[in-house]
Length: 239
Image 1 (cartoon, rainbow, N blue to C red):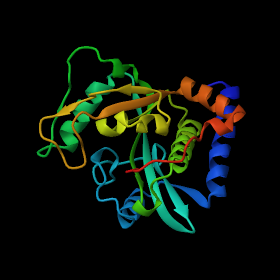
Image 2: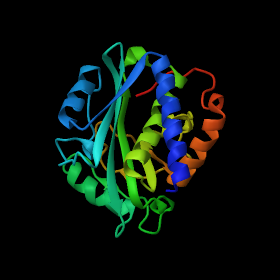
Image 3: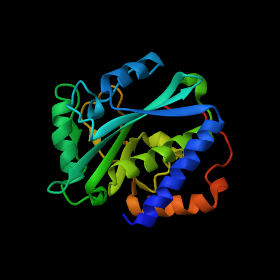
């Protein structure tokens, strides 16, 4: 990534961080995976999916981490990210191989098609984001949602300089516009279907993503027009 793009992302990160702090919200980064999972459970998150759980993975502190939201010194939310390198295999084959192990005996991934898939353009250095959760009493703010996810995007790019960031969103939430609120520019409906649905997963999940060049353009625009990042402050649910 060009130095000018990195500088744009640094400025954008500061805009998001400062705006959150004006609302009394601070952000903590941590690679103490088990402690962060316990903190999320303590504020009401009932489960951690295997894809980023310390129970199922030997996560490197250099290639994974959490961002924790706090207000008045108390945890109110969090999200996790992990860095993977996909060069010799597609994202689809990576899911198939990983999910076969992670959900063995409880759920099974059926790839929709054996042929080339649009989502397999997501390759190289990639960031998977998951476990996004905000405690129930703090939900309902579009401003908080957008600031936090855009700050996460900038943080991940500054830390790992990936080619792509991606996540999964429930189909109903994607149709309600949550992927756009998060800041993702690409949506792939029906990324996979389940033979046996596992707790915490949903039928017809959307894969959502943003490419590094798109994020750099987004950061440059919002740096010049910060008021465009935030719109009407109204959302009903952030889980």
